[in-house]
Image 1 (tube, rainbow, N blue to C red):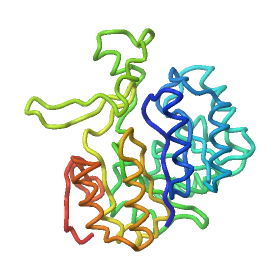
Image 2 (image 1 turned 90 degrees about the vertical axis):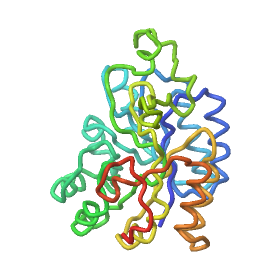
Image 3 (image 1 turned 135 degrees about the vertical axis):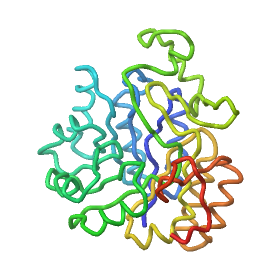
Amino acid sequence: MKLSLGPILYFWDRDSVMQFYAHVAEQPVDIVYLGETVCAKRRALNTADWLAIAGRLAAAGKEVVLSTLVLVEAASEISRMRHFAENGRYLVEANDLAAVNMLGGHGRFVAGPHINIYNSETLRLFSDLGACRWVPPLELGHQAVAALQAGRPDGMETEIFAFGRLPLAFSARCFTARAHGIPKDSCEFRCADYPDGMELETREGEQFLVLNGIQVQSGRTVNLLGEFPALHALGVDVLRISPQSQGTEAVIGWFRQVIDGRADPADAARALSGSVAANPCNGFWHGVSGMDWLTDTGV
C-alpha cells in the first residue's frame, strides 16, 4: 500500500509552502498532490512555482499529481486549470467535471474526492474517460467502499482520505471574510491568519466545524489509521494524509510504520489521537455520524 500527501488546503505564505515541500522531499511518502484546490484568489504561488516544486519532488523519487480547483467560477480559473491539464509530464487530479472534460485526450487522471462517484456504473464511466485512480467521496463508509471495490474496473486504484480535517462543503461565499464582517471581493486574505482554518464551536463548547475561506471542514480530524487491517483487506491502494501546519511529519511517520508492519494500527491510532489529532473521528467509515469516534469495532 502506498502513502500520499494531499494538497495543502489552507492559505500559507509562499515561504512556508516552499519550506514545507523541501521537507516533504525527505519524508517517506510515495505520492504528493500539489496545487490550490480551495480558492482561486490564493495566489501566493503561481503555476511556474508549483511546477518547480513538482520537479524537485519528482527528482526526490515522489510521484507528483497536480490538483485542480473544486469550484470554478471565472475564465481566469479555467485558464490556470488548462495549464495543469496540459502540463505534459505529471498526472492531474480532477476535482471538478470541467477538469475531467479538459483532461480528455491528455491521458490518465485521478478522480478527486469531490467528484460524485457513488456506484459501480459511475466508476466505470470515469475509468472509460481516463481515470486511473479515484478517491471515494469522504462520507462513504466501509460497506459502500467494499461494494465499489468488488466491481471496480481493471487498472483502477483506490485512494482513501485517511487523515485530516474533512472538506465537507464549498460555496461561492467566503465564510472567513463574512466572519470578519467584510465582503469576499475585499477579503484582505483573512484566511491567511488561520493556518489550519478558523475553528467554530457549538454553544455547548464542542468543536464542530472549521471555516477555511469558501470551504467548510469538519471540526474533528478523521483518523483511519486504526482501520488499516480493514483497508488492507479491501484492497485499498493508497492512504491519503491531508497536510496541516504542525505535526504532519509525525502523522507520516506513524502511517509509514503501520504500512511497513513496524507498528500496531490500534496503538498508532491512539498515539496520534493523543497528540496530533486530539479530537479524532471515524464515524463516516462506520456508517454513523461523521464526527463520532469508534474504537474496537472489529470492522
